[in-house]
Length: 533
Image (cartoon, rainbow, N blue to C red; front, side, top):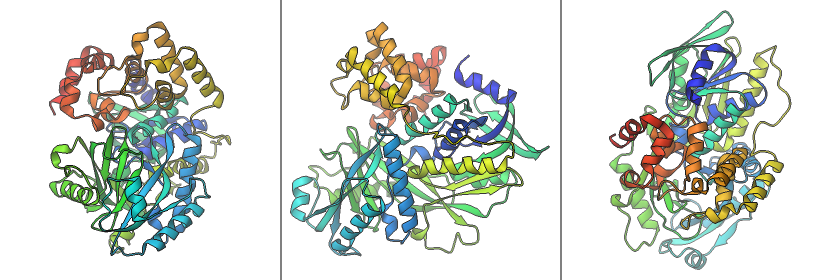
């Protein structure tokens, strides 16, 4: 019986302290925080974990320097502290990166004023990162020759952080951590109805793959449905003070543009920050900010033209980028929180990117509105605190629920990896050592991968050519990562679908074997399901 099938059975057998609905970053950290503190937790998502907004971000964990312009100093301070916290406790995954910013003539603020702002930003962040640096036109051309300085007046360099792997992989690390602490999680489970009866929530859910109906009970219900939180509140007949409005953001992934691992930052024609973000051997370019009436969004020709036009203006490329250069696209909506009586009156660009957790103590119900990946640990702590306040008989120990694991485990892993010369198996095309990648992706479970390679060195071979995934990693995904569809693995447990064209993945040596490992006798069916869409 595989992990998902086993968990589906447990969902109906156990009465839970908390059911979390929605497996994006807010739901994942809620489940991780609650289970890490000892609560009996279930987590379900109608699609795969992180399949909505949480897989469409910029892959950045940043303090929000742009919010200084709207004088949200408290929010910037909080986000900077959260960024620092992530870097400190996830050093293999969340890492400092330099933002190389160019200011053009006629910009709404003089360059010296923005330069002072970077120092204030550094101050607000407790000087945690490297200090800012002023850039003259000459310095910009010397450090980043690819940048077009014809209309530049100068610039600056400052630090924030980025995710070494993709955002969806980071989200799943919290889901995995929650399951390690006893959480019963299942993807492709949709809540059909939610009713409060006899001092508990009676949930009717449906396995969207088999159409089987599941009955789940819990004392507390957490709505972490992201952009669909308002829809779920209506389904649960819960009224709230807040609501969401939606902003569409898109990114285009192309071959690597700059040699240095910096985020090239500009102000686009519409005045918004615009990035070229390194993604291994690729570059992710964006983003847009388009108001949307619903959470459902897709990339349009205008979106593509906006991104391509802006990047071609600001970089000196041998050949301008065209649609033919696009390897992959990311498109999602940011759910922005606002009060219901004020949502349509505030200036669109002035809406805050903060989160709100609204609690209904009478009905034992929480709704998480808005939020950013950077602030995820605060969301987890806040949800745990509110659940504890709701339940008289539930008292949590004062212990930390997040982080990469104990230092002694890390030391043991790298000691064993060195003894067996694991890094000698690193593929020639890889940009990092195999030991570093194993620890970042799997933590303590990476020790089991070492054992498999000791027994059979072929387990260290890259299986899908063009992607940095070894045979034993794909076996690990099959065992522990609830890969239900091929897209789950290619797009969310890994970033293969972001850095390889679909036709290249299909033709890649090893993709068929990977499907066999992941899906057994259903391999052909899952292969066709993905590649015939």
